Image (cartoon, rainbow, N blue to C red; front, side, top):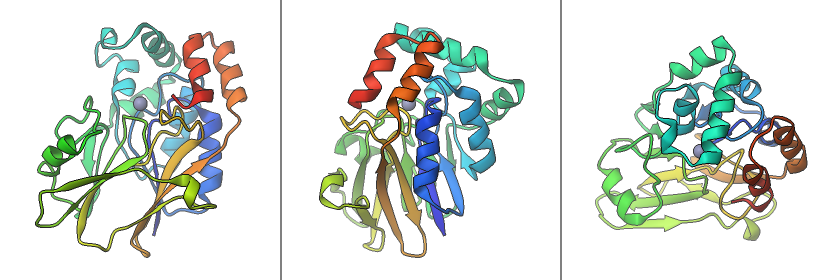
Length: 250
Ligand code: ZN
């Protein structure tokens, strides 16, 4: 089974459509939250998740757009974009987002959390120390996380304490991304990166593909028409710094 893993779409419809096209056929889609916020097309992105997502969770920006967490927790640009995104939402899309949890198990092997298992809404899981503490917070083999907008992974061999952090090296493995082999008796945190606002100095849309038959996860990147999203953002009156950051991948 091929499972498309997406996170932090952030209302970037052009990027999301590029990911769906590049992914090819898939049997399931798991969405790790922050479907909206920042970008110009919240309803369209939620509609695509309602159509495709087998499992979905919510993120801090989703909750802020819905008015469920305090907008003062965000910087002025993000706050303004969240307010705008929330005001656009059609009732059915609002209701769908409102029903999502910030973390959920999928089955006995896989679980999802927006930020981290111990702090699903807010923790940026970026260090081996954080990963080490969080491996105790779930029982499955692989926890997929989002929130940091950085493609990365942590691995811990069963029976050992040591945690290793790894970043996919997309340049060295063309034309497809780096493949993580799940058959090596390890547990993992896997962050597929952000579809709509990457922050790892690579502006291409990021996603991952889980192949349960091959027992692998592949990190993927795909180019999309960044100026098109930027034009849409300008037309919607979204803040300039949020428009510009897309072309730098930060
Ligand atoms: Zn996000």
